[in-house]
Amino acid sequence: EAGVTQFPSHSVIEKGQTVTLRCDPISGHDNLYWYRRVMGKEIKFLLHFVKESKQDESGMPNNRFLAERTGGTYSTLKVQPAELEDSGVYFCASTRARGHEQYFGPGTRLTVT
Amino acid sequence: KQEVTQIPAALSVPEGENLVLNCSFTDSAIYNLQWFRQDPGKGLTSLLLIQSSQREQTSGRLNASLDKSSGRSTLYIAASQPGDSATYLCAVGNFGNEKLTFGTGTRLTIIP
Image (cartoon, rainbow over all chains, first blue to last red):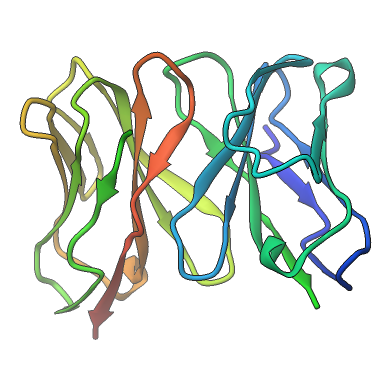
């Protein structure tokens, strides 16, 4: 069984540009989460999908962040326009059902210059 | 608001020793607790998941305990090896929602 995959592994963009991160969860996992770690801080929750529906987006920092999960399969997280403080590592996780282990992807390291 | 603390932030021990990593949380209304390890530049690897109704879970040389009433969990590593060197993260699944609240981690170094 393939694990959670994320693309790209690393992205360097200039302030004001747009970046789209992609996450492919484990096949059959309806629950998909986005988290991020900014420099020196703990990993923090961004949002949670159940299939294609946003279950909880309480962690999204502002309206420059847009997450989608068309068809309930892979998900994208778009940052537009990117700011310096958006730099960090963005993780995606998936789980089959509530209360089960969350399996994390390798992360996307975003650097905004 | 749930807060998770891991102390110490860093720990070095000689190879072969047993060790304990600590995790504390402020809100005891949790659904589960998960321990992860993270190697430099890598993602998170799930080690153990403890449901709120359980007291402990074991996997190989790892044993995690949970005391919900006191807001504490420990990760016990037996007979440590250099390959155990990594950052260990504790994350709490809160009751009523699905998200994990993470601690800042303990960076473990096993000295050969």
